Length: 138
Image 1 (cartoon, rainbow, N blue to C red):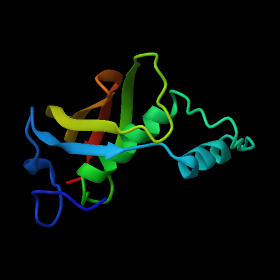
Image 2: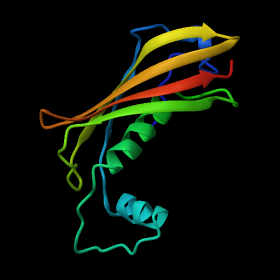
Image 3: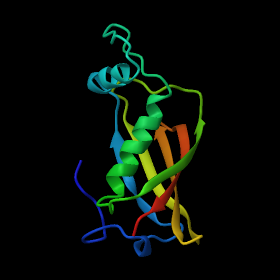
C-alpha cells in the first residue's frame, strides 16, 4: 500500500473535519494473515482449513485505518471501539473494500477526540461497521 494523505507532513487534529472521507482501501485475507492470526492466539495453523473467522475483520478494519491516517503524530491513544458484524465471515483472498471517515471531532477536558467510522463490504455484502475512538496527540 502507498501513503495517501492530503496532509503534507503529518495528520494533525486541525486537518480533520466531521464527515471527512479519509479514503478507501482494498484488502484481503491470505495465508500469511491467517498464519499471523493463529500465532496471536498460540494456535497451530491448519493450511487445509483456510477459513477466516469474523474476528479477522477487526484486523482488516485497523489495517485500513492505519493506512489512511498516515502519517500520524506520536502519542495518539486508541481509546475504544464499537463493532457491528453482519454474521458472514470473510472468504480467503476475497476483495474487502474498507471505507474510513471522520464522524465526530470534539475537545473534552483539554483532549482532542476523534471518532472514525470504518465499513467493510464485499460483493455487495456489508461485513462490518466499526467505530474507532482516538485521542489525537497534536
